[in-house]
Length: 354
Image 1 (cartoon, rainbow, N blue to C red):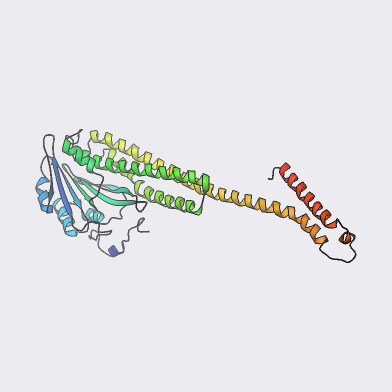
Image 2: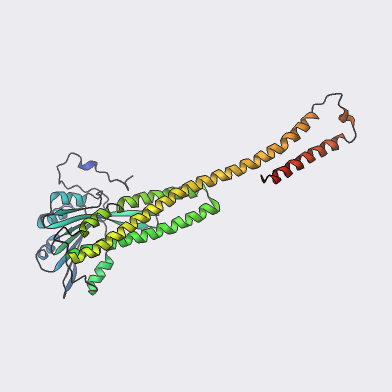
């Protein structure tokens, strides 16, 4: 249940905007990194205090401040105070059970997304909340753990590839969202391979373990869908270009990510339908096996009914039974029983019941 819904009992009764960290403490110490870049320059460094990033707010170059670790509320409050962030935004940042969404405030955009990664050891998808604040020439990113999927974006900025350094903070926000969506495709590939393997196992030799694997996979698809489905609305709102912070040149790229999101959702729905069909197929396979077993047992019982009748007749031990003192009576009874069995088997085979 914690994977589907975070426990928010600690916030009950508190005033709106009160900062309470809800979620796991995934890093002992808050880590801060600063990247400043423009068309002709680039600077990347780790900073010790959040105050070191404050002078970069009003510079013409683009500044990306990444805060890793949401449990230190003092850091979050300092960032919010300096960048004039609404208290409700700060509350949503530290509450990691938020639904993916996008909100347009005066002077900046706020978005909540889910960073999904597949854990091979636990054989499940882990979700981490990522908060983005996009200003005119800065971007703040808040994440729970140091491991992320943004290294390709950082590498492009370091090498100056593409239009990363030439564009503004809105294009940086697009690049981060695109990195998250690309990771979704990798997870779908893993799910597709697992579903294909389960289909082959289901046809060859379905067991209770197969059914359990199907149910586990169905739970993972429900969890995956819960994290991805709201993303379509979020990216759709960004791509419409209603905010002055999102330029038309960036909206084109956002529409492409929107198409990718729809493709992911369609694939998830297809996988869910396939898993439901596999459950029906498993139940049908088990039912067919049971029918085959019952058919064999019924045929055996049908053959032995007349044989039991003959054996019952000659097992009554009445005194005056002509066959009891006949020399060939025993062999005659066995012969009759054998003929009856052969005739019944021939009849069943002729009717293709065997």
